[in-house]
Every structure is written in C-alpha cells, then in structure tokens.
Image 1 (tube, rainbow, N blue to C red):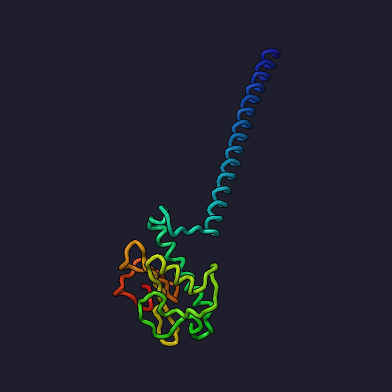
Image 2: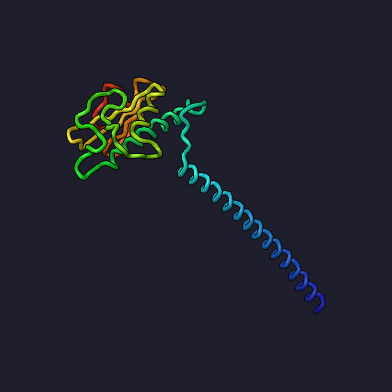
Length: 185
C-alpha cells in the first residue's frame, strides 16, 4: 500500500512539473511578444515624431497634386507670413510688417516687403516671389493699426478659393474671394 501511495504521489509531482513547465513557457512567450510589440510601437512613435518635427512639404511633382500636400504648401507660406507678423508685434499693433487698412487682394498686398524678418529661411519678398512663380497669390487683409489681420493664400487646385490664417489663430481651407475679411471664420 505504501509503495502504491508513493507511486501516486510521484506521478502527481511529475505531472505538476510538466504543468509548471508549460506555464513558464507560456509566460516567456507572452513576455517575448510584449517586447516585440514595445519595440515596434517605439519605432512607430519615433518615426511619427521625426515626421512631425521635419515636415517635407512638396510643392511640385506628382505628390503635390494631392489635396493634403496642396493645403500643406499653402499653409507653409501663410504660416511664414503669420509668423513674421507675430514677430513684429510691438504690444499694440503689427505695423512693423503689415500695412494698415489693406483690403486689396493682389499678390503681396498688405505685407511690408522691407521687413527684415527671416522665417524658415525665407524673407517676406522671397515668400511673395515663390508664390508668384507658381501663378498664385498671397495677401494680408488688415484693419487700422493694424491690430488684426488675416493672411490669404490662393489654392492651386481652385483659383477661386483661398487658405486663410488670422491673427486669432483661426484657419479655413476654403474661403471664396467674396468672403474675404479680417477673420477666417
């Protein structure tokens, strides 16, 4: 009887060892898969951060014909002009870089081309020239002072529509010429 009991106990210990080995193998497999997932997510996050820090805005070629790239190219120039305007803010107005009471919609109107600010490697004159070379236009609508402004960049995919950025930080990707005002709303 003792030997039978001893044999049963020994068989149970061996089966428990097999069960424990299986559990350990499963835990190790889950751990390894978790590490692979962490490395993959880290790589994807780094890639996304690098793209966000260093956007490659393509303004010509096949990829520029997509709506997203068109908006990015226009937004780039509008953003440079807006940054120049904000850089010249003296606490009460934007007279260092913008012309007061401008309502004209010709290329470069409302922007002081004598401004010496350089943003993203471009001066105001270079931005206006780059836009003009593409057969488009960029201009700024201002009030007296000027204490408010809205930068408009013509969309290359629809010459009747403009991308807008205003002094309040609002933007609109599709403004018609008849809707041009100091606000992008």
